[in-house]
Amino acid sequence: MKEKRRGPMGRAAEMAEGVAAVMRRMQRDREPRVLVYDATGYARLLQPQARGYDGVLAASERMVRLVVEEEA
Amino acid sequence: MAGTLTPERTAARLCELSGDARAAVLLDAAGSLAGHSDLERELARSLGELARGLFEAIDQAPRALGVDPPEQVEAQVEGGTVYASRTPSWTLAVVARRSALSSLMLCDLRAVLAELEGGPQIRRSVGAPTAGGDAVLDSPMPELGGEER
Image (cartoon, rainbow over all chains, first blue to last red; front, side, top):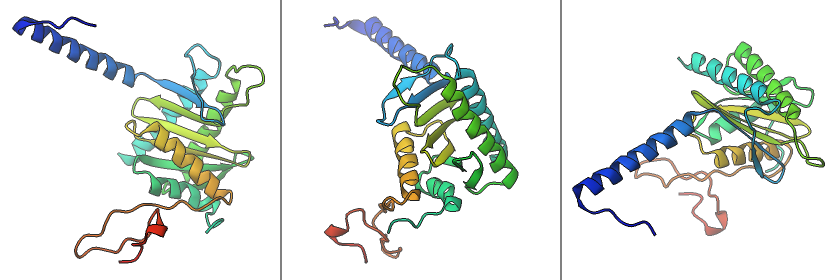
């Protein structure tokens, strides 16, 4: 079990760690990601070096861009 | 009532079901545009071609021996997420907000395709009416009553 820090410096450090974790998560969420699902709903992450990944990403980016431009 | 959804209405139906869906297209088994949500025809055609390319790219991806090709795909990119689902007869693709919940969107895609293929009609749950508001149109659990107010 993680030992709890005490004092104002400890609390500030914990807050900073929390903010850093949120920033890391936000950064990760912004990264492109491709998931494929089989008939049972089992998900598999398509790796960036996998064949087909670039094609999926290119088509998806173009689709989103077209819709965003239409909405603007 | 089963079998009331037409290919022309399917994409629009998906956008009605999900507030996070921005645009949707339906392709037939040959990959031709069979329907689209409220879009310019040219835009719908472009989205349809890209949706077809999406699954062509997916089918190039390696998979284990004996594993069927993926039925659904989710691609998160800057500015939004593309979800697509296919059956032997149809492919339905939607551009959604990045904040959309994947599980709900994929479930909606499956449900709409199932309805198109003669499955049960999707029943929507609606909120309780306000004092002077409209009546509840459809209860997800009609056996509990309260459909008409």
